[in-house]
Image (cartoon, rainbow, N blue to C red):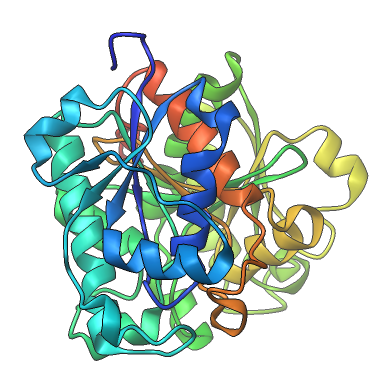
Length: 344
């Protein structure tokens, strides 16, 4: 924390060819964020200057070049990693060099958070094809962060004022989902979600767990009995451990208004099961939180938007919300849960 009691938030610049640079510049200039935290962009000053010139945005004068010096940051600043040649960055293009740079920003920010140089991590969007072109062996932030921090149990949670969803599986092809489900994994995601919601809202949450198949399998008529064999035992385990949880619910009616009014968070079996309703209801307002890490990490709920990169059109609301939530969680203590107990 700074001397003024404001948490220092490492904000990774994301893919240099996407909207991340301009969003980060807007965050650094946002007075309302500066009153609650000290954002420090982990990126490249030269890229920020190019993007700023294209979008009419100023680049802050405060620049750090050593991680240990970040503990002295008392105002919005940039940690200049010089990970890519700014002259070679092509806005809107998928490139191995920008993928490698985005990965370096993340890894450096994680290490700074683990070392205590910053209090939390907030990430701008990366491009999965650019990561793959750079040889990064992870499909996205969540998997990279879990590996870098050694987190044994983790999950992705997307949260907004109208809806919160945690995901049991993330970046998998649809035919791989059923094989990736286990009672232990679902129970861990339920426990992680409950812990996060307690800390966010200060009370015992009401959770709902979605089924995998249409109509939640309808007593074995659809699917291979995943609801009965895998999902229901995880729900029963959570109930035995004192959690307020229902399910498995039919996914097509789980998100109707009446159900949402009495549910604090949903546990969803796969990526689009949770993200379709969430983005329908709260696109550009939701925040991605990685639960189970030993550090606080939040992120935007959108991608690199290469089609509008460096044009000054990107909406910064999701990044602002992600930084605010990172500051809130940092003030309440590092980390986001340990995954709870193992199912019996």
